[in-house]
Image (cartoon, rainbow, N blue to C red; front, side):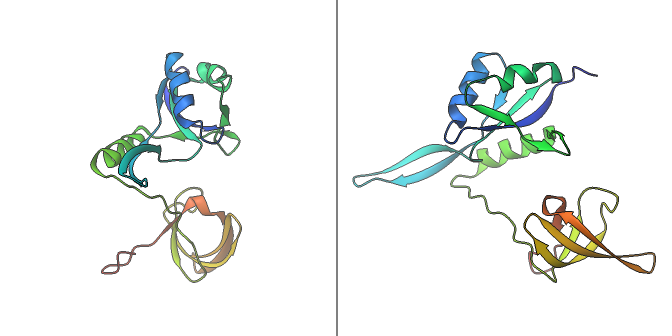
Length: 172
């Protein structure tokens, strides 16, 4: 399974998403640049334009052998890394993005703001699926208290590994 193709995110030069997508496609690489239909107001008209949903990111479906070819493409700065390896994106996540953009226009991305006293669920690691409470936020990490085995465990966890707990009737 060494040559199994997986989705990866590549980081591009600013405003090069469409060009990198085109250059990779010309090389025969399976690539995806999610485009968002956005209405823009000009002085004389309103025009619908296609803008990249994720600024400076393009997705590629490649085998590990193709990574150098992708990295050497003009406009590609590097792969997006997670735990010192290129981050693998699940097929299901790419498919969800495609379906979502097919169904909706004028999509806006907002990062979720994690604040002290919020309840969160840990998405990765030894405490995966455990619920905890945020006590402090430090740049890209959060200090979380986890009740386990009758003890309070305090851990610093990357904010990307946390999801907010949804409460019935509130939407969150």
